[in-house]
Image (cartoon, rainbow, N blue to C red; front, side):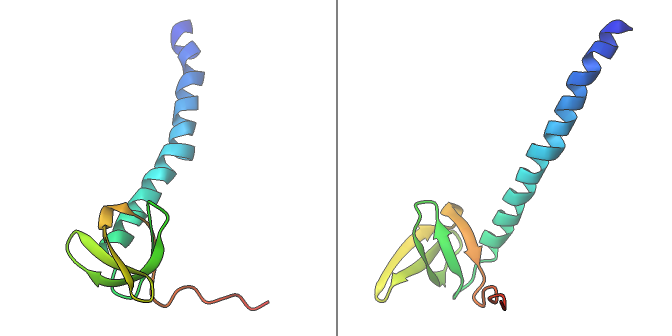
Length: 94
């Protein structure tokens, strides 16, 4: 009986760790994957290498990103780390 009660704190720590660390990370990854799958022309994106630009063309596994006027690169969709919809967030009124 004492052995089982001795494991209770470890089990509680693991459960807390799961709900505070692992589960939120899985949700963020799922949200990012959904955003990457839904990327469309005009969206602002950030790649894993830190390049920021606007999507000009979308293929099944690649996107074409305009970094500056007349500067376009192709990137694999899986390397996108952030997707902001074309309209973007409206600035807050201060």
